[in-house]
Every structure is written in structure tokens, then in C-alpha cells.
Image 1 (cartoon, helix red, strand yellow):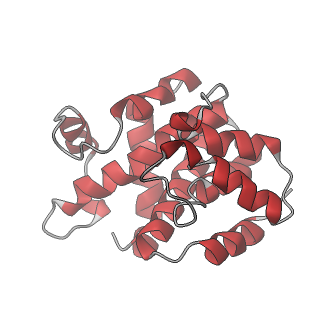
Image 2 (cartoon, helix red, strand yellow; image 1 turned 135 degrees about the vertical axis):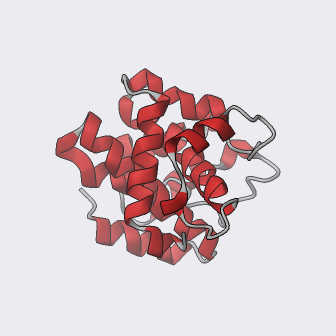
Length: 188
């Protein structure tokens, strides 16, 4: 199994944009938090899924063809000598447009954690200090119900966390706690 260090090395080899890198760290943090509740023996593995979920962000033309986002990451990982079908399926599942529907807790978690990380960041950005520490659960919920706010963040994907037995409230709490714990790395 790949270590976090190996996963990070691959991430840095293929990703340059700071926004993409901090997004990867945020999703990694949320995934580790969700794993503590759903699969406590595999916290680091879930983190790796979060860290690598957008590996192909700068390597494929997903803006014009969303079906390539996810499968391209799998090809990159295979080229790097990684053979991990569970990881591959989870990465593809975070983008249902790739043709892969989430079926496992791991897949639903990354599907939900991805937009939630950006959503929490967007909520933090409206505070004067732009700090995640200022963000309260109820303000995330309030903004969640304002469909014009961060309209690119897919609410259905976030709510898919419910397929794991956790609630949207649980996801918000995990995101606030885990992203808060690495707020300096995230610039929040």
C-alpha cells in the first residue's frame, strides 16, 4: 500500500497550482475525519484518496470533457507503478460524470468531501478575517440552503454522505474541525 509520503510526492509531481494543492490537503483532512467515524482502521488510506482525488486537474482537458476527470488520474497512478483498484474506483467516483457511480462508504465520502471543502472555504471567505476558525456550523447550513451561494458546490454530492449513515451535519462538523486543524496550511 502507498504511504502518505509517496502519495504526496506523486501529487507534487503532477500538480503545481497552489489552489489545487490546498484543495487536495483540505479534502485529505476531511476524508481522514470521516474515516475516524466510518473506517477507523484505514484513516491514512482514506486521507490518500482525498489527497489524490484531483491528481489530473492540470493534466487533462476536463473543462471541455468532464468524463476524463478521474480516469486520467488513474492512468497517471498506473504510470507511477500504483496498482490499487479501490483507490482507482474512489477517485473516479468523486466525479460521477466519469461514468463511475459511488457505491461504497469510501466512494460516497470522497464524493461529499470534495465539494464540502470548497464550500466551507467559500463560507470562510465572507468573514472579515477570512478564517475558518470564525465559521460556525449554523452559518454553513444557512449558506447551504442559499442556492446562489457557491453555486458550483454540488449540494447533491455533499448530501450523498447520507449513504454512509452519517448526516450532512456530521459532514459539516468534520469539515470544520479537520480543515480548522490545518488552517495554516490552507491559508484559512
